[in-house]
Amino acid sequence: MDVFSALQTAVSGMKAQGFSLENISGNIANSQTTGFKRVDTSFVDLVAEQAPSRQVSGSVRANSVLTNSIQGNIIATETPTNMALNGPGFFAVQTKASDVNGQTSFSPENLYTRRGDFKTDSEGYLRNGGGAYLTGSNIDPITGNAGSEGPIQISQRPIPGKATGMISYAADLPKNPANTLVGTTFSGTASPIILTGTGNGTVPAGTDANNLMNGSITGPILQIYSASGAPVQLNTVWSKVQDAVPAKTTTNADGTKTEFPAKNAVWNLFYANDTTVDRGKSSWTNAGTAFEFDAGGTLVEPDTGSITLAEPTIDGVKLESIAISYGKGLSSFGDKNIAMSELKQDGFTSGTFKDSYITESGEVVASYSNGNTITVANIKVVQFTNPDGLKADSSGNYRQTLDSGVPVTGLNGTTIEGQNIEQSNTDIASEFSKMIVTQQAYSANTKVISTAQDMMSSLINIIR
Image (cartoon, rainbow, N blue to C red; front, side, top):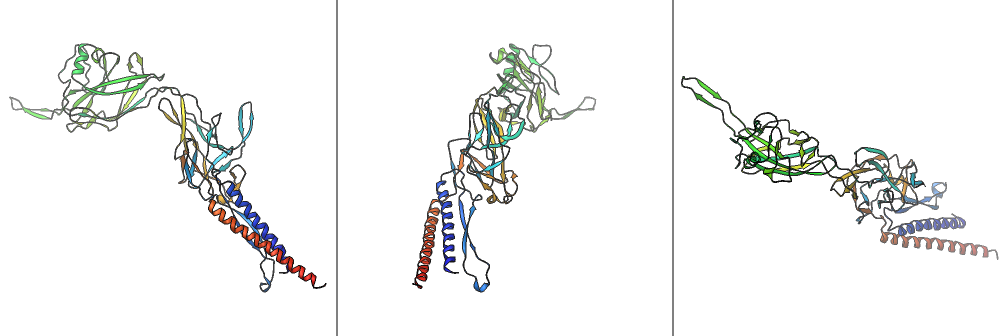
């Protein structure tokens, strides 16, 4: 290498170190930018084609190295719709194309980002600090139907009430209750008691209702809902109407034998038709099924796992048919009282939107004033075979390239941390250390130039 080549090499070294300093300064400037991925610098020796014995150090080229696969720290925030990816992957986002007559339209191209400082804008879209809109599958909170994939928009419309259609029920009835209806008679011509199978029966208010109360155990009280979402109280009592009798054989006077088969214990379930008055002043309707338990206390009939209250009328409100689902959760092993293990229903009153939050699995959940939480969207997260091959833009987004490969949709082990954001993966101490090394290398290259200049001056002075 001659003196002129040394000058050129020193200049390339200064350019390379300047390029490195540019990356360092960008990293430091974005050390507090949400989801920012630092850019490192790699140096490549450029050697001219020479014979091995003549090969000398050549100039240098600097290349940027992305660190998209290196995660930053995750910190908590106070915004429920902020989110951070704990693991590999990117949020799929779109940018605004135009805003005409108050209607936002979006670019068809999908971009990708780790920046998760999403907040709802005036239209209900989830937009981050870089202006990108989070995409996924929207779900109608009223119908539960999934819509087309695109920018997620959280509807703040109120949700209508839903009629109770199912009651999940599990209980242990006492084996020997303190009060029973065994032997009790009612004044009506048709007995409201059902001993086998199904049927109908109503206990009228007054004396018969008081007899029912005296021979029953108070069951659960549950708030249910009409078709309009109006709350209605369901009051129930359980009544034992037949004791279990073991099988026996008797010998008649003529020496013949008579077989008496075993009888199961039978319970009936009643509900009040009017909850606004004292229990004895309301009529009570039989749920219409004989619940038979064997000597061990196991339910044997009905074995369908559920019964149906056919359009009951309570407090003057006609309700839709309600299925009481007990599965294998109904037994008669207890002592004196009913032990409830499950009691819930699927109806609710109307509710107004309160707020929304993000789950680990990427669901956007809206909560309402009636206590309901409904999934309103599923977030789209993608992963790349080579995330460091993505092309970055100035808004914290990335574009797919040939080097990155195609996006694969799904969390695939990654979790979403709601009410958190991912910090930049820039380490200030490391960047300062690299800055010192870069400055020293830059100064060394300038020293090469000044030395080469001195050598050229000495060469020129030879001919003087």
